Image (cartoon, rainbow, N blue to C red; front, side):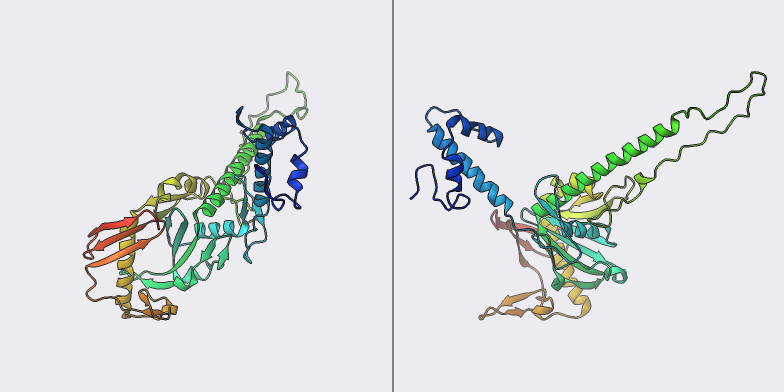
Length: 366
């Protein structure tokens, strides 16, 4: 049975472990244990003090056991371990390695940081794309969407390969915060070593000069030499979790077009940890521009329909649940474009002119 304020034995460790631990304790002992575990306890005369404290401590124990049994993150072949984060929890080495590779990738990058998922696209030069492959899975939610990759050519002849990655926004935030703390700690260490070297170089060396006779000629002046200072503040420091710690003061800042609510929220964090400057773009305008880009590429390539498995841009679902590719409509405008994420926006696009669309509806629930 279940007692008021209690629980069945299955909740306690080993079937009644919680009863054994708290059941025989006095009110004073229970209060001391709650203080030890930093559990706030209200002062109310209307409560069954002992029963309330027992229930509170049991709930704390259940939460602690669940937290300790979290499934470890899947590790890719490029990573060997997980790291305890200074912000709490565990950060997968695979996530840190992917973040570093994204940061160092040539070409251009863009990002959409929503309430649930963060999506990143890299535009890589074809000759360097082979060096920037990503594991299919990294961390708990990170994914590389190899099925979405394609090559394209701009009007000026520049060629690029698009690669797409995604992961939960909370996982991304935790990993970048971890890197930010690592970078600040490394900077403090480098600064301390620099000041120590300056102090050692400026301190007099005792017992190294012989006494001179007052009649002896004064020695020729010696040109001062600059102390040899450590160059670590300009270096990329090696670490066991990936190829470098983000610690260089003079590392150039990269720009990344960013849509979504996270464009402003995470801008200081990305600037501090990765030296990436987020350039906010309007999300709905980016959705329309992306659709126009796909339509333009299909027309330039002379291909209107591709197989669904080969990355068809447009498709519908048949009666048996199979994907059926569709051609791009001709004429294309006007059209209704629906963007589904943490929220839903319904747009009416009237032409290919910049900004020629209007939001006609939507919901806050996606």
